[in-house]
Image (cartoon, rainbow, N blue to C red; front, side, top):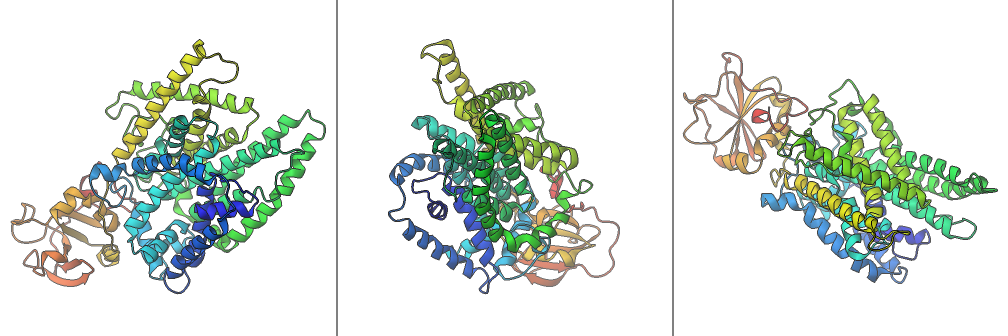
Length: 599
């Protein structure tokens, strides 16, 4: 957060700002990506991160007002957010790869980070894929000596904490307990918790930047209204530019759609608001230009080196409506999930497909929808259009993705809207005594009851999603993935330790790493299971992979050791194969939880 607060201080903000967590992460992402490919294979990133952090801390001495109060307010929020985000590891009783068996994408991210850490390229790098978060993981690895699994896990938890702290920027007027509750509901709404549960750090980072941008725009409009003459500082919009740059490094050019949409809708609403004021529209345009050009310059400077990669990213498979558009989904997800009450441990399920009857989903959605409508009216009635504008932009992105994209991209659009929907609901909902209502009146009694019902439902659903998260192996090596070219076109039997398969979601992990071929996965047990009664691999199997720790002896009598790859041994069956293989094909978009043997 020192990064962000230092940037805000350079822009003229002497008081503590809850934008600093999001702005700081955006700057850290840009810094690490700018330095990760320098000589040293990530060492330069670690040094740069340390030097800049110390420099920001020294710069801020005597330049921040309200720091003690910020610590008092933020500490409980940070601790509770960290505890909630850590629930997957608490339930499993160990640390490991988040989302194993939910989402295969972490396999590519781990490999990309490993190659960055060794100064190598890779498929994601060549495709223009945004690798800013991966650069942070590499820097953490070089600076703290942690592996990529720990690095991505730590980044994912940190984003949950930073999002909850950022939400405090729009909740400062609430009493302490309600403020803490509101920050947690906004920082970890159901869909954000669900994406965290599948290890989708990139989407949670982008949701944080969208939330921070909306709150920053809201703060800017409030400062404009509070300053005589409607002229906040000339650098007032620069933090928004930094958030936009962070969005590019985490999500490439698609991340800008939410931000530009929010600005456009907010500007239109502001024009409508001042249309009857003499010179109001002209003043608004002048202010927009005065604030806009420094922000645009900062954004251009930060993102100019990434322009070519953004152009390359246009061809990424996710954007092809005719491509593998489902990803790890079962179908289109409901946009109602963005409202926060969806009582299912798996966000991909339809109402009634889990333990809770469908009526439970519909009742929760009806309550949240009513509160959302009230919230939008509450914000607009106060002349504070930035947050509703950002939500409207997110809704527009979802409609566009649903109409012209894939279910996979549409689901991400719903996730981005979730923190904004929560903020629109939570801020007015937790104001129990709004102007015009007498304490003890019917409205003053009903509103706390509705607030309690929503808070209980939303918090319970988020915790359910987090508690249902699978946690995979604690270590990672690219060696297993490195065997894929050698195995292509042949069937492979993997004999893995039984505790690895049973306790660490090892079957889907192996399927991740060996996708694209026919693979059978079985426990390495003695005596041999019935599938291989004659001390011979199953029919049609050419290769067998075992763990090096199981010893150098072949698991079958007719195998030859092909080579050792890290902690794995690759065995080859010589001669002709009889009959077709019964091993399932592991598709490139790896199978879902319900399919057998990771196939």
